[in-house]
Image 1 (cartoon, rainbow, N blue to C red):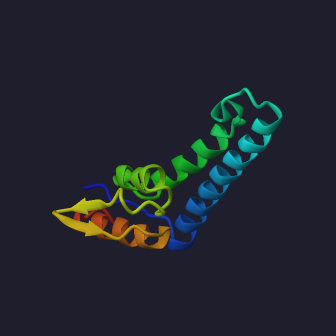
Image 2 (cartoon, one colour):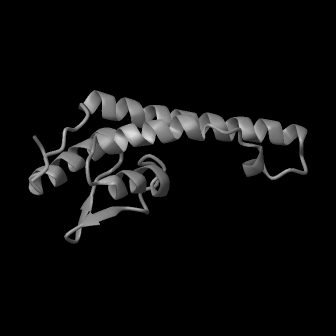
Length: 118
């Protein structure tokens, strides 16, 4: 069985914080540019940060093994833990994903339960 080497809690949280911060900045800048180009759709005014965010995503996913869907759910459905109506359930139990540190805890539990940690 292949074991997974996981990022430290600090690195994991730092990457998620950086992705969230970049996302907020992108949306804020898009709205500001939209004031100048008021007939444009704000989403079309976002500048391309995909190379940076893809590199961080790849690093993050490499560091959490087989739980990419949980990380994606946290980032995109729950907006980095802010939207609790998109809760995550495992075996009919709601998992607290209100911040990246709690997400890290659950990633570790899942990986340990599946024998994936070194």
